[in-house]
Image 1 (cartoon, rainbow, N blue to C red):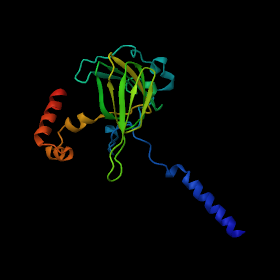
Image 2: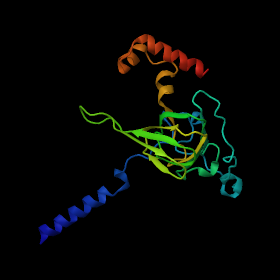
Image 3: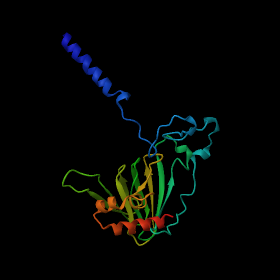
Image 4: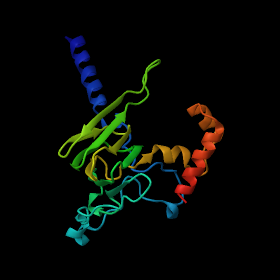
Length: 230
């Protein structure tokens, strides 16, 4: 009886420890990094914005207009993302959601990118989009699996957090889509810009070996991205 009681106590203790907040992982950051500093005068607030005094909050803090207006797609990609996040809608702070409108010209592309801090759910309002995402690195002798779909108005597609994804307008008209994200600031990393347009540039030897191409091709790509973004 004593042994059974002891076992029960140990089991309860283990379950309590397993469910304790002390064993949980750190909260997901809402920025790329946070360097420790001892000088309080040079610090910034992490994982959100400083909260406004509730007595000073108004309805305008939870309101933003303009998503009915198309964005300017006159660029090399033929697409434009109009984001609504905590940086331009303060009421989103701590709520864990954000929104974006994506406009596409004919053949317009929202290029391969990731959201390091949020899952995206996309709904098409107008046009026809070819969308997809790629799984993270698999085991040995396996390839990264690609999931794709053709979306028409009213169709919905989900891009899991952190995975590379894209949208291409394959219809005969302009296209419009709206995306919801599971973070007030999901972040975005455009793959080509990050790899070939970083500042300073990634060493040619690294990229040439990674992509198995000639260094001259890498130089041309880096020069192209440099001119496009300056």
